[in-house]
Amino acid sequence: MVSWIWAVIFPLSGLLLSLPARADVKARSCGEVRQAYGAKGFSLADIPYQEIAGEHLRICPQEYTCCTTEMEDKLSQQSKLEFENLVEETSHFVRTTFVSRHKKFDEFFRELLENAEKSLNDMFVRTYGMLYMQNSEVFQDLFTELKRYYTGGNVNLEEMLNDFWARLLERMFQLINPQYHFSEDYLECVSKYTDQLKPFGDVPRKLKIQVTRAFIAARTFVQGLTVGREVANRVSKVSPTPGCIRALMKMLYCPYCRGLPSVRPCNNYCLNVMKGCLANQADLDTEWNLFIDAMLLVAERLEGPFNIESVMDPIDVKISEAIMNMQENSMQVSAKVFQGCGQPKPAPALRSARSAPENFNTRFRPYNPEERPTTAAGTSLDRLVTDIKEKLKLSKKVWSALPYSICKDGSVTAGTSNEEECWNGHSKARYLPEIMNDGLTNQINNPEVDVDITRPDTFIRQQIMALRVMTNKLKNAYNGNDVNFQDASDESSGSGSGSGCMDDVCPTEFEFVTTEAPAVDSDRREVGSSATQLGHSLLSWSLLCLGLALQRLCR
Image (cartoon, rainbow, N blue to C red; front, side):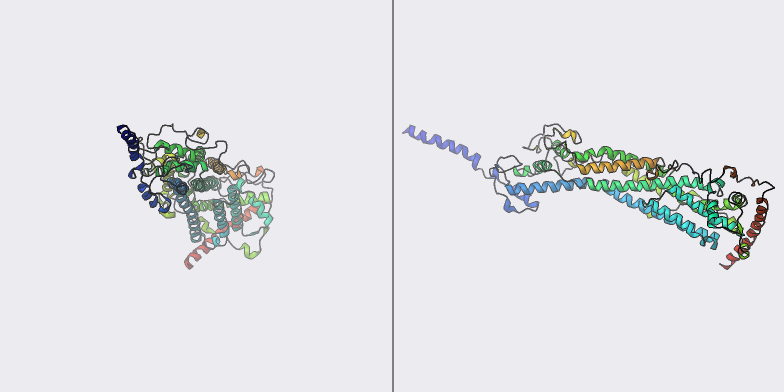
């Protein structure tokens, strides 16, 4: 009897002892998971009330779980979306830096050109009156070409500036010699003497150096901001691979499936996942840093010798100075041109009675750099450059730093101070594997993400090439070179004035020195014509002085 009772009790006691481990509903409840899952906006119809067997799971550990197949699929997609948002949010600073500063610089440069053109027009109308207005297209074309260059037009700055001075010489040569008629061929001959005779003094040479270097630097810098903006916008929109998506799901939402929705991933675990998912982005870093360094170098040029603001603000004064140089040297210039191009035909009587403009004598007050006005958005180039330099320095190494920036977010990981109570991919415990280095090739042994290191992302490689090309342009701009015209001539650096004509066109014996009167032999016809021209010029200047006085009285 006793033996029978024990035979019954012992099996029952074994059953009773095992029941608590299997029948404790509270320990296996999915209530916390249901609450967290619903907070994500998902339907609670997908989620069980208590743990179920996990053989159906494809990513998370196949143990007792709160996840159905549908839940795992939805949470996998959710992890992908959250990752994409994290990358976009983390790169927000660098993207907004390039977007906002590009807008600022572009607005500033455009308004600077508009202001410079308006200032010159106002000054010359006030000073030269109808004389300027009748020839204003020469100056309008100058600013049109400068604007076209800045906006990306195929304009050779040196050739364009040479053409401007040649055209101005043609116009002024006719004005100071109204007693003659000049054909188109004769005026073309006159223009060939622009560099050799230096009728405008040293202004064209200096202005060409300043304008060329300043505009190359300004345009290239804005192009750099454009490239930086486009690269940052493109790279921040990631497309995770299937291997990355699996790793993200395992890191972010497998804790849900294990009934631990409040447990966040270990920091080092997060780093390995992000380094695997962002391996190609990290490879952008080297070229990006070189690009930022080149941008900073050009920014320094903009602050110093290539400051477009200090070139454009006083450009009206400089051109006026050149015109006055031409006036002062008019007799010598005319004599040398007549000597080289031949004696022109006399003009009809009515035209020869006209005089050259005495108001060329007008002098302007000295330009004061302290009076430099603020232009776009009430700022100056110096302030803009100082601001962008600070922002650019902060954007270095931004792509290799993405994993660290994401994983230090307290809403993503448990942080570095909680290494024992964090999700390590399998359970709530310390994460033991070592942290991988940056870049694609270093992910060959990444324990979390399956990365094919033999297939670099072609899209990222395209961005690397875009940065490389832009960096080369910036380096050229830093040295005063325009890469678009680098092979056009030896003067592409903008460091010299260049030659307006070849020796066979502009004979070397017509060397012009502004401080000396033209030396002409007594037995040549030009002596008489030059003397006549001198008399006409003196008369014309006197007549125009009277005309200018009457013109101002009528205003």
